[in-house]
Length: 489
Image (cartoon, rainbow, N blue to C red; front, side, top):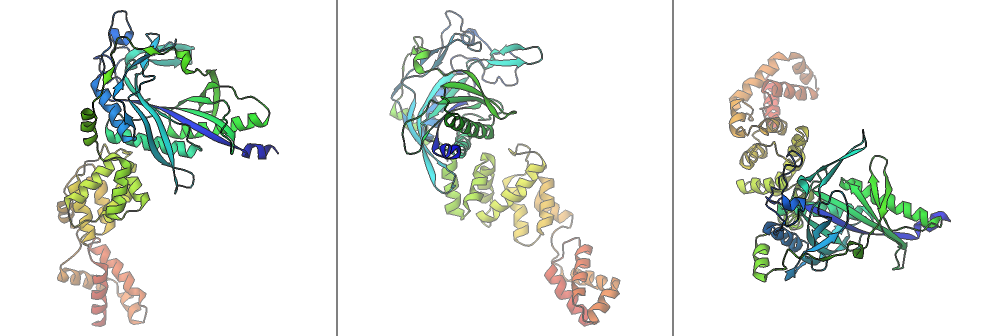
């Protein structure tokens, strides 16, 4: 009976993602935005500290970034947008309020398609809004003596908050959405979107309802998830926790819960606030911003090719599978490298290049612990030369793979290095004839086996020829020459 009750409920999930922008300065002051490696509390000013009489000024590049992301998510860009004060008391908020956006956000009514459980049908996720705000300071907890330190360097950093409607029905959809949003942010170049460093943070609002009804139970917000997989696990845990609670007759309380990834469970933190609890009112020190259609169109025309469009192009233009195209698109540098390699030679086809990048180059980057290809020195042109040597049957693939692992870090010319080391396949028939002759003379037992009807002896002799030629002989040509000379024995 309890199992039937659990199965009769479905999850309803909405996500709030904070994207930290990589602008040169902070959101409302001229302090540097490069705070990650700086000494704590070294990048602050009167605006960051919220001192009386300090006046904020809006970072134009942050506005541009907000419009870029809004357009990429299919949002309407507001003609007029304004900032508001969000009032709450917390140790990491110096002013006692956060400058954010309430009723006139910069972008609204967007949409994005994400894969659901079937991975074939895509679910439409509505984007409620994208709004601008400032980040708070960073609290550092010392568990040894139960003390807390505060680093103000992050205070005032520009954030975009992307809020969805509660359209997710599984943790898998939420995970796929986050991967897709992260990729869009990186392709736009507006942020690093690294969850581990806190520049891409997600809160999940989870509730359940009986299937076939629209009535929701109270929602629970889950925080403190520092990896996309952790978000998925936290959602799965919370769905099950709420189902079990309802099955046991408990009431779901609207609250904020923290996620403990080590223990794989959510922990109550505080009661969940509603909008009226924050006592929003317009920020008096920042006038409303008028955004012209001309300004938006200029940004729109300069947008890069986005991951979904790029993947569709790879599938349509190069006949790649959705899987192979997806691997390329998942890493912006890898996708750019793929395009550049194809542009370096008209003799190369997309499938061949994609296979080399997704399999062989990827294996080397993994061995080098270079997931983002930051260590890679080989140029697109040189990579194209290397795989053309294989395609034109001048170098065997194993040799090429060994060369690739070497020139990955040096970019030494593939053509020159393969010639200077005698690695290119043998084209001189006289040289091949001499090597075959030596192999036959040195392996009389194999010759006798062949004469006694054991044709497998030829394969042994081919191996000897390949060994003596250091892999440069063509196996088919070697077999022909071996049989020819054996018949003349």
